Amino acid sequence: MCISKEAWEHFIFVPLPQSRITKASSTCTTLCTVSRRCEEPRREEPQTKVWQDALVALGLGAGAALGTALMPSVAFMKLAMMVPPPPTLPPPSPPLAAAGQIQPQQYSLLDTLLPNFNTDTFIWRVSMLQITEYVGSLLLGSAYGSPKLCSLYLLGASWGPAIAQGAVWRLMLPMMLHANALHIFFNLFFQMRIGFGMEKQFGRRKFCLLYMFCGFLGNLISVAVDPMKLAVGASTSGFGLLGVWAAEVLLTWDLLGESRSRVFLWFAFMCTSCIMMSTISPNVDFVGHFAGMLAGFLLAIILADMQEEHQPSWYNKAKLTAKNVTAVIILASLVRAITLGPDGPIPFCGTIFHPRRLPF
Image (tube, rainbow, N blue to C red; front, side):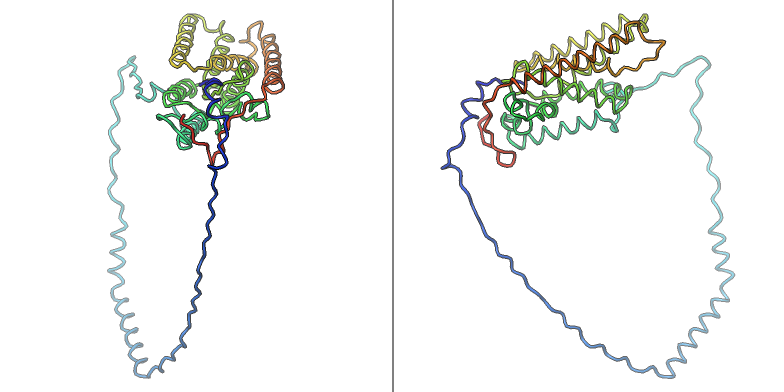
């Protein structure tokens, strides 16, 4: 999501008058009561009489004799209770398939929508965190079912002048924020659609590095190109996963064989679908999307560890070129966004605990 400067300047950059700021103080008094408990003196028990002791001894002796007489029957009852029940037959096994006949594998709707679904993954946890952030932005301030601009800014949305003044965390936090329900739905569905399988392939640590780096570099390049916009969304990381996929296809092109045309058509279909979905809203950060894809493409080549017999002839040159290009892009973007970035204006949105109430 991108919001231009003109939509802000008449509402956000004007501080509230001091007359509207009131302070309230209250005092409270706590009453404490102390209670004391008095212990009553113990009463001395009367002495036991001789005839009572005799009756107790007689009762104990009679009980012991009765227990000895009933001992065999009690032992028999225990043995009878310890006899194991008759063994149960195992359930009948399903009929074996005929020779040469392969039973079709059944897939659930969840497996069809989200292949390799697993809750013990990074992509699932970061998606749940993004949902939590979205709910928090709504609670902080919402209008027409979407978070207000000040809510997004206070939670870390990308804003060039703030980043130029040292708020570098705004290069990472925008990937956790979303502008509306449709925005977060498509982003989460897309990243989980291809993220579960990709994390299973690369491992949790490498996939986490790819996801976070794509979001960081996508936001950095976006701010360097156009600092005067408010940007949020995990699209930079999502498009970065497409870049990782493109790098994988490029590195294994000679190994695909007859599957090249099918893989190429599927990749082209995914890219076209993402671009068409991005055009639904007029406020779309295309620079951040394609910058995230470029980041994923470069980092996937850098982290590639193909076996030597499967490496193409240009494998080592591609890795060296990707490292140099990535370093130059990061350095140039940091200089442009921070050193040469605009000094203002800075939105006047209050604080997270005391946000400024705006109509949008």
